[in-house]
Length: 228
Image 1 (cartoon, rainbow, N blue to C red):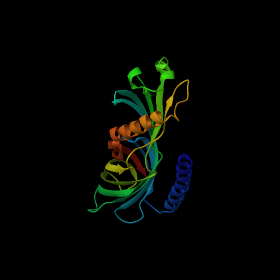
Image 2 (image 1 turned 30 degrees about the vertical axis):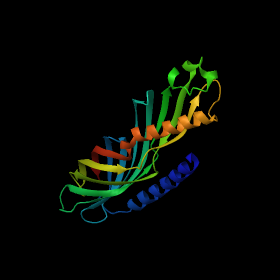
Image 3 (image 1 turned 60 degrees about the vertical axis):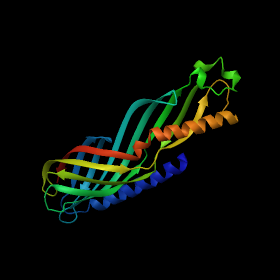
Image 4 (image 1 turned 90 degrees about the horizontal axis):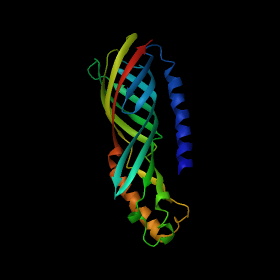
């Protein structure tokens, strides 16, 4: 699955730069932006082809960590969010307010690390009973590679040259979290034992349920812009 996702992401990167190259031929309204927000830091290149519209393409990157206790197991989560955005803005009233729609080409993932207490080890795995301090759970959480986006915003200068600011508010629909590669790490490999597989399958469902809010990821960013 990782191979297919990385290949698809590489193809989308190529399409993204093709779209931006086309935008570079616009005669006026070209813009650059540096932003920060709930998707981390990012840069954007944009162009205004028609009155009261703007096409934006950008890159976003964010890492952060958090923890959660799920079924009495303490998990540490490490996010690695990086995405490309291709968004179309429409200013319906001809002023700074705009509506947005588009997609994020999504390589977002969350690393999972869990510590296992003695009473959480599957009871039939007797060879691990004295090694509980060396036992852990690890895996990854992935999301769909193409995430639709809808939002609203405010841009101080849509087509006028010079410096400006922009605010984006919206929602990224990146799909339910999908836990992959979840396994028990121990001196003795027990991941093929039926009881362990059932234990891990249960944990996958619990983690996906705990992280379900990530499928509707809130987007809020403040951007410093410059139009040529």
